[in-house]
Length: 132
Image (tube, rainbow, N blue to C red):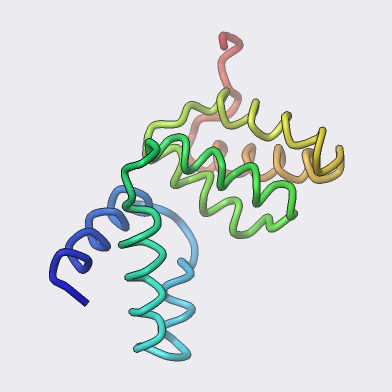
């Protein structure tokens, strides 16, 4: 891998995940296979998430929607933190999660909203202000 990909991986990981609580996927992967963990991180963070075709806020809202519909709550909490780190507003994230009810069902939406509430509580941002 080029030095440029390594640099982009580090920059993007810092942007998304600095201060994120809990185990990060990279740490889990690394515990089992350091080389594969590096390769996955270089691709996912350094090549996919670092792409500048869409803003980081949009990329994270898409990720939040997908993880909500799939009911991948643990990963969703990680990406809700990342979404807030890159500038998504709590109300925007709630709206994205509400939108998923149309495609993933109300139970998935409810799980997503609970995950958002947990993340906001941990960050001292709950309850959310009434204004949109």
